[in-house]
Image 1 (cartoon, rainbow, N blue to C red):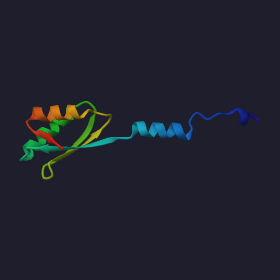
Image 2: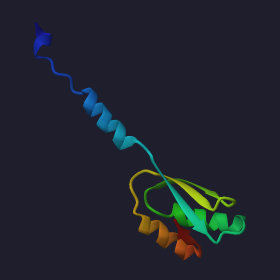
Image 3: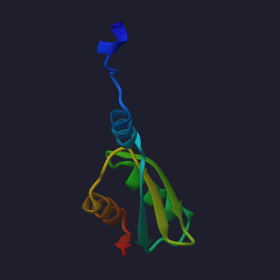
Image 4: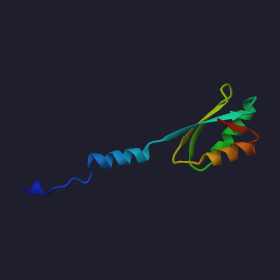
Length: 91
């Protein structure tokens, strides 16, 4: 009889919403002008300094950076950080 009035705290919809909030985001940035490992380290350091960046993997050969984020970061912020490091973002 008591279970008739029982209402669960979590439904499948609330669980899905919580999962989406904790889901990690990834962004690929194309970077022009890197020529050596020093360039990769400098670019990586510039990107890691942005609030919301969890991890950065810079690929010199393909001129890309794969960035894992904890929350959304505007494209403009990445462009500014990479420009300050001396490199160029392209699409």
